[in-house]
Image 1 (cartoon, one colour):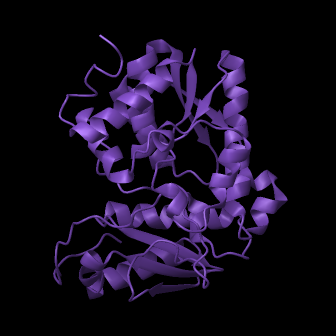
Image 2: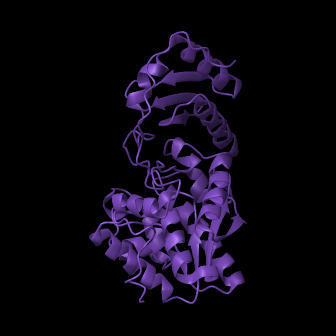
Image 3: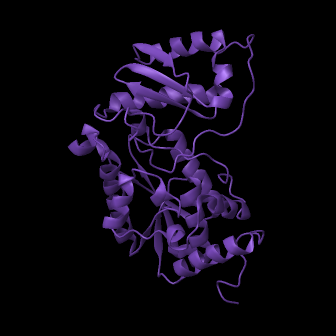
Length: 308
């Protein structure tokens, strides 16, 4: 049976999506081997699943560890690679070694992606693999200012989802057909996206943002960001969870916890969480196709006591 005739995943995809997925899998199968730039998000997970389906042990998922990757995301990447059954490697680098990245201009994501994918090519060479793939999908080129995509083009990275015309909703459907736990996961932009353009990216700022968001996650919030405006924490909560954030107990607890992390002031943005809001001109790209919040409103609980 040919690659394109064999069902993708559990065979539940609609015919058009199934044809596109089979095309992407067939193109991957023509390679001698591929290394997937693997964040553990739904896009790269689908590429990894298709590659593992097509190439078996000749497909490798690789996650780049750096100061901008939350520890929880690295743990998720390892778990999802196990779900897929694909070999998982990690490489380490530091965006903070690049003065252009630290300066945090409008091309920050370009500098980051160039370094990250450069490390992927080094890892691929060490493994004897000639092709590096990423999770760019067919919706990404129309998402506005995306300097990271320029790095993908310049480095000649293969984008199987884009080449097959697979859009974001189709990516999620394919993930469901492979029974991947990340099928509905909102995309997670790197931590540097929380720092306004023009304000230097430092390890101190990245660390306190990561710790602050970990607190909100532990308290049960799903759609949120903590933006670091030079010591002022701007907390954004998804609209369907914003009412719960107005709980006086939450306001008191979040102020105390974030102040302990080094923020001088803590504010709640009444407009709620939205992507790309970190910079006044809206050019703060959130790399990773950040889609925003997911449903999960628990309503107001005035009697709830948040942990001190």
